[in-house]
View 1 (cartoon, rainbow, N blue to C red):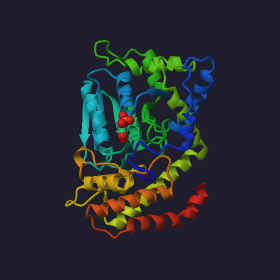
View 2: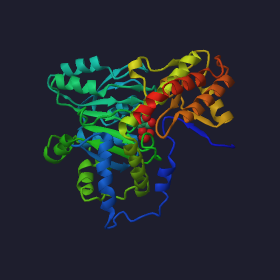
View 3: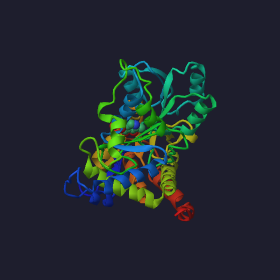
View 4: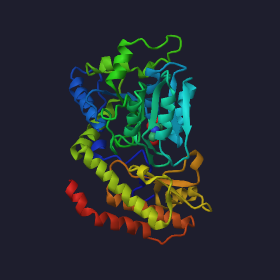
Length: 402
Ligand code: PLP
């Protein structure tokens, strides 16, 4: 095809030239005497992105799924209680992993498009008088449906009830893009990956771990040796001990970490609050377009609309896959597909990472052409026009932020 392909999926995201350049280096010795000069400041700056002073951020070769496994295996034994909710493909897959690891999962099934149910979590935790629930799981941003959950509210519930469970958060499509406060929200393990807000290729699981978890892993023998899941490759303690010296327990993905250095610099130079405001603005432009098309957001409650991805419901007589295929084949635009329960019902626009207004308009224009090809009725240009109006009307507010 001639011209650029348009990447409108919610990860992998567009890779900035600066990140790509930072990775254009000869392969290097990961045991070089001066490696800590590179790694230790990187570990420190990653903590700023997770907004933790007391926690530690580990970088494992892997992806978000590996981060989920790391959280569970390091901290839990078979039979331990886990409270979770399934309301989309990713929240559901984490639950499935818990079951595969023989954890005792209390899963609150929600309609897809809803968020983590705070009241149901309260009820489940209040009923758990003997504290058999050891971990509470929250998928902060459900990428399949474009729903953001209120992690702070879950923490408040746990604190109100004085429940000692650990709080684990899937931040794969939120950290580095929308507000995430690891310390303030009392998150014990926060899981992310390299290919979304961090604007890198896939290949890293980036995992924030609280002081409490590290302390317990090191000092408290709460785990039954017969049932302990065993953490193997993702051992937090082993990683912490070697990271302290600036090195790794095994061969790290150095090239990706050179890119990570650049992406963390970009996030911190822009300022996290500006990053969050930019994502909100771009997401709002997409939402204005959907309304103008006469379509609906898969996310049910406005309060939970995601600023990193929007899943757009097509009418029942249409197949969203036709839109996705037309976008890809006719215009070189990759839209996100509907996963599992929402396959054929939604197409998704990822609006996270290295993105500006004009790039969002390109995605919306591509989606409009594809929707017309798929036979969806709407006024051509209406969505793009609504986004243009929103972006230009709010330009002064944006300027104030910078
Ligand atoms: N969690 C969420 C919210 C995701 O969006 C994804 C992937 O898109 C994952 C977990 C799994 O991450 P990975 O595909 O990097 O293993």
